[in-house]
Image (tube, rainbow, N blue to C red; front, side, top):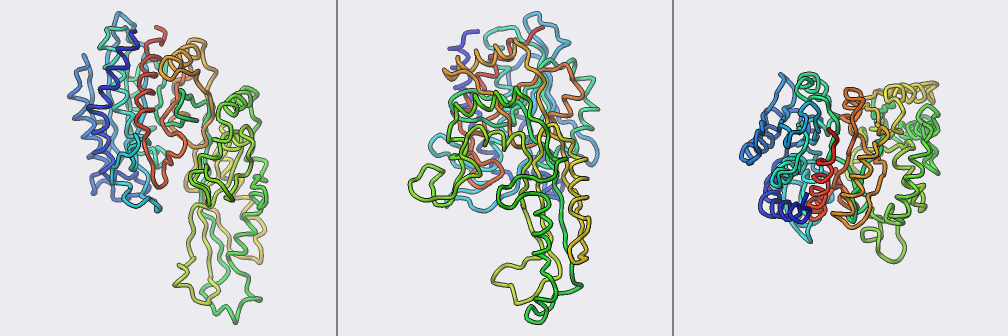
Length: 480
């Protein structure tokens, strides 16, 4: 492999084609089904899939077959298949994974920016979805084209690009079952939907947390009553909800109190966290937009994290459970709130789980803790509605460790970093179960301040270019 030529090819492709493709992709509000129940009627998911199909068919990749696969009442997927080259055995394959569905709009975008308004500033493409994860299809086929342009032997490559990932990938198992005979013996899963500790080296994801989400509802009255007449006699439904939350985590430290939601942290992951902490230092927490601080780097007083120890912070967000309240119902807006003791409070809970905790059991444990012995005899319910187990990568083969480090040094000038991620990608567990002998290269472009799912989400264009180059280098090293 001529790495100089590889870089020239990929830089030209990102400059001349991929950036503009992603600008157009950002414009489409292709929200995941969990956030758009009328996704089929709106046609946005179909639009981004068909756009990707048209671009893929225009690529000069020998033997490429790309198609839309669809199962009734399920979101569509793109599937591509490219035969091995250079005499390589076509029975073993590299499986590329990505998704084209998006999170909803979210408030708080800077003036002149918006989720469906692409804007390039300081080498960053702002807008919803390009980094999470619209670039994956375009990067994957560019990787294959760049290798083939040099005539370097590579394994067979297949790709599955779905459109329900942001909803927890409910449609994916059916597609994996349908496509299993066409995937072959997967030697390497190249998932391009993850994060990066910084923009200065290649990062490989070693684990993903799970999720037990659900709705906690507390009812104490059949209807609202005058607060002056009832307060002091009727307990507030919000106060009851607050008491119940205290059963789940310590309100002072945030430590989750339910033993069933914890798991031992493997020694290897602690060692990797120490190495990553030494690389990243305070950036582990400074990357977030703290109140009173400009992207965590301003002077003066500002909000602070749970811990400033980078190693503990990494372990907190990768191997320890954490509770967030991400939504609420029964609470009127302040300017519409009368002096009424409300009958009901409902809170949307999101419990991130260690990678090895079974999410179904965790949700059952949460329900048991929340619903037992309800304060004041209130009607308390916890209904799980988003449950997905995490993932812990199998041991990396020596060839993959060597290939990752070599690619990072070649493309970034620094060795690779290995780190867990706090989010959930259900696809990883599904593939791990289906292909237990596969190696996993889970990586991505979601580095500091890229703010996936939130306002001002962006794709770091230079990093995406270098990552494409690095993955291309690794693909050529997959053993026959």
